Length: 217
Image (cartoon, rainbow, N blue to C red):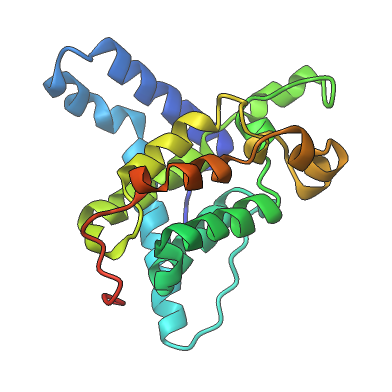
């Protein structure tokens, strides 16, 4: 058991972090002093530790089963994170896009609920309680890895910031729905723009100039 908190605890932690930053934005000391009260980085540490545990188990030829209560939140986080550690392909720009498409979109992370998109598709007010920045939390984990191993990633920090902002704008069909079934039913591919088309159009803005493709550690 990893001990990684559920979506409700992550939402609470996110709100505390937001309040900390907004109330203390004129004092870096106050922001840092109040970080422990948010529990945000405690969770980041748990996710990273669990990702490395999976990495170590697989490199030792063990079989790993990743499973949380539903399989579309913590499971996506740990599966995608461990693959970043295991395979340098997923640290390329193309590979990172494939990783998100595979372990987040195709495997059913509920972006519509987690991002707070509510409409006539599913008007029940109870679904509002399912907002939680699970994907942003994972992007933060990727950020921490990049800070310590920057030359091993083909993409740069701009890509993470772009994704963290744009998943909430509703401009791209990529993150509007909960599943492949919903994306197919509401014709996301024909009625909306893929976020990856924008990324590839401005590809030079998202490439790391000190990337070393020969570093496979």
